[in-house]
Length: 371
Picture 1 (cartoon, rainbow, N blue to C red):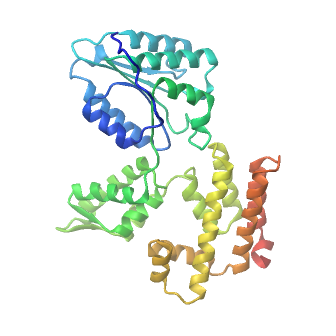
Picture 2: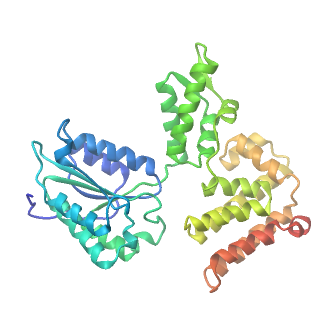
Picture 3: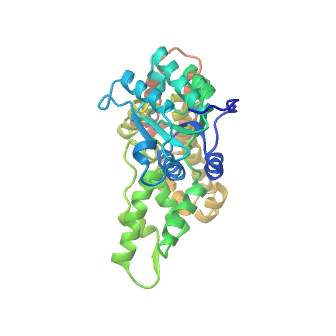
């Protein structure tokens, strides 16, 4: 394996845009893919494969290495990885190694050191591209991640690339691009509704887009194909219950204690950060209170939408959820969130117990009657 004289310096997590630029100019080195958006990881892994691999030479130059117990023991997989890094490309300039099914944070020190050694060797090579592919549930993506000891070791050995969930504007543009490619128009409101139903995640969105395209072509038919909100409501399926942000909004708007406790249980199982869960919930109650106050002040729904920078259909959903809820109940919910936030940052109590207590205090029938 040829070596460069100096290893590349890692200056923090790269953006997706920076990775795309590297692919265009000729990608080389070791990369750690992490973050919440698995769809984009798959997309860029495929782009890298096509940029590196020459047709017919895959069996010589492509090394997919799985750390799944069904494939090999961790020690066996690590040995395969070391051999792949040392291998010489055959009849092309580069080889590609993709490492998957690995939770780096769970590795014992000796195996983590071996992994980082392999990454560093690949990063210094002039004939190797290595991707450590970590799904969303394999590296927690929160404020503590990049300061964790295991992540610092990975960052010192390879280039890290963070795949965040995409902003709402980009998602809507992406949705509309898919439809326009099939000569189908979709309204902004329908595109936003679709993004919200899929909790902003591109994998379920891609499935729902395909369903709606088929519906437009083979059921609606006609010369001018158009998808509106009624079509999305009829055909698309909301994200699964484990999509915490979407489920949390539904539970909050439904005012049912059992639904909110289910959401909190799911967040706990997905190892969400309790303080982040509370922040999302607080934002929902703040929006509820502001929208209710605006409606009580006789501000038209369309004007409220402009003030809140939301689509009218979202404002309508909020109004339906708070129409019979007294203002002091919403004010009490926000006060309880503030008090819970202080406890989360100071009390030794289990944070999930504090969140469950918050839900009970907000959603118990007594709370709804008296605030």
